[in-house]
Image 1 (cartoon, helix red, strand yellow):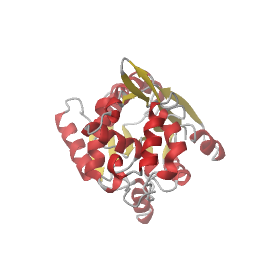
Image 2 (image 1 turned 90 degrees about the vertical axis):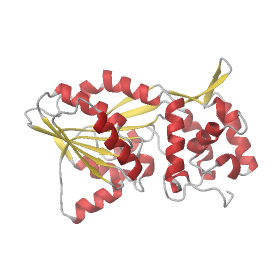
Image 3 (image 1 turned 180 degrees about the vertical axis):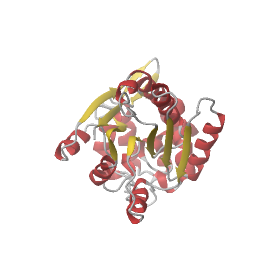
Image 4 (image 1 turned 30 degrees about the horizontal axis):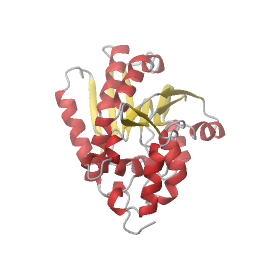
Length: 292
C-alpha cells in the first residue's frame, strides 16, 4: 500500500462531499424510504404499548434525513405520545445539517431532540463513567457499524439498553452486494488506519447467533450509478471512487496496479451491471431487526 493513501474519514469535509455525490447517484435513500413506508410499521408495532413517552436513540445519524422519516412513522403509530429522540453523531457539520432539517420540518410536534457530538464508543464510555443505564424503546444504527472498533461488544452494549418491547434496527450493505465483492477482495489494500472495518449484513447472523440474540433479516435492493468513475478527470467520479474505497483521492494516490484491479472489478457482474451505456453498482442493503 502506498504511504500516500489515507483513509477518507481523515478529512471529514471530503468524506461529506463524497457521501453527498453517493446519495445523488444512488437509490439508497429511496430504497430505505420504501422500507420505512412498508416494513417499519410492523417493526415498531409494539415498542410504545402503554407508554406516555417513547425513547428513541439514533447512533451515527448523519444529517438526520432517515431519522425524521422513522420518527414520523413512530408518531403516526402512537399519536399524542411524547417522543424523546437522542442523537449520537461525531460530525459537527452533520449535526448542524440535522438541526436545519428539524427547523424546516412541519410534523415534529411532541418530539424532543437532543444531540451528542460523539462516537458510539464515546457515548458508551460516557454512560458508564456517569453510571447511567438509560433504556430505549427504539435504537437505530444506519450505515455506521463499519466505524466502531469492536462490533460484537458494541452490539452487546446497545442491545442491553433495549426496553422489554424495544427494537434495535441495523442497516448495513448487503452480503449479496457489490460492496461485499469489492471489499472482500481489496480491503487489505485500502487504508483503514483503524478508522473502520468491513462488515456486511451477511456477517451479522453469525455474530448474533453466537450472542444468543433474536433477530429478523430484510433485504433492500439499491443501485449506484458509477458511470462517471470511468470518465477521466470527472470530479464526481473521483469522489465516488473515494467513497467506494474509503480513500482520499484514490484516483491520484492509489498504486497503478491497485487502481487497475479496482476499476476492473467495478465493471464485473459480481459488483455491477452495464445497462443503456451506464454502469450500475449493486449497492443493496441488509436490514437486521434485533429483539430484546
